[in-house]
Image (cartoon, rainbow, N blue to C red; front, side, top):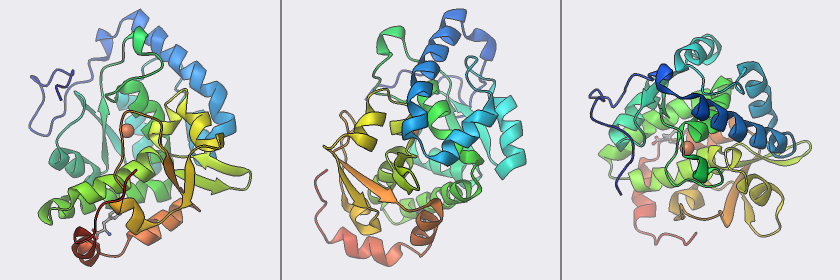
Length: 259
Ligand code: PHE
Ligand code: FE
């Protein structure tokens, strides 16, 4: 896959300057339109932790300065944002997470990609991922995930661990007092997928099952047909806390499950 970011100026950890002044008025306006569309949907479909965080982020005015948000994040949970040109290699990604640094893509999609984009852009990354970094339990979980990623690289188990990320951090659902809600960034940042994954009768919504998530393949170019529902971020934290080494050894012998 050829990536569309400019990697030529990236440091060895793939970080770049955000260069906020390079964004045109049109780009800020496009970000605002994306933000406004999603904002109409989230009260019905997003989990309360995400809603509470975005409310305090003052995020709807256009593309934000990452440093400004990092300052608030550091105070809340010790996380910060690091600007990157787009998708980055596993090792760089896990290393950032293991240092409580969340990599954020600097570029924004084109107007004709309003409804759908294949590569994550700054809207997906910012709107989908950043708010939950303000939640202490989620924040600690993602830190553990990063450390677990570096370990999975040594054990040749990244493929399995990446499936867990997909079915939780990107497309996870959570049970709340008012029903099932989304906490996955891929859902939260998508115009169509929010209602589909939370309320449409089509997708299977399974109780979170660590082994199944590690084994289940996923498709990146269509609405998810299977989602896993957690009871809380504390459950996610608790169930992923044990060492995965024996689990990887066992699951490696079993066939992967279709999406
Ligand atoms: N407990 C996992 C291991 O030992 C690491 C991990 C933590 C993975 C949190 C995912 C989420 O490999
Ligand atoms: Fe994402």
